[in-house]
Image (cartoon, rainbow, N blue to C red; front, side, top):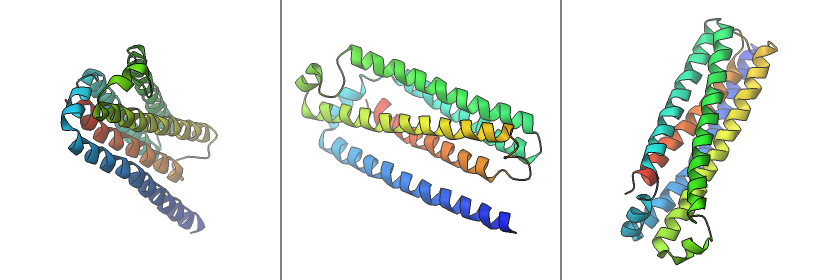
Length: 198
């Protein structure tokens, strides 16, 4: 019975934490919407400079990682601990692939002088400067969340290997999965805002 109360408290705490994350990104989405309404032409032009193919590819990668995470939890529930570890490990690896693609994309922008306070950025119209400011801020913040999610899931893997997460007690794994799914959902909103803005 104590374990049940602990599980309930753990899940409630995770949901409350996720609400704060939604509020954080929700505020940024509102700021983006306001600025896009003020500078529609500039946002359209700046959005055309982003690589939509990389954005869609990263979306596919994150959606696949959400699937592997969900299947990993199901495997743990069914007592298939090895499969659960493999699937959670795949989720972490897919997160790394996402970050590598994002790194390539950011490197290309830096190479072309499109980064905050660069000489080229300062020559652009104000609306385009705001677009890139929001782009780097929001995708950068999301990237930090991906890194945090990978860290959490890596800790989950260690706990699974040590037997602290097992078919009889996997609430922590479920909580880690909830966080990872939130990271994926946020990206699904970022994709049309930036990569399909043109």
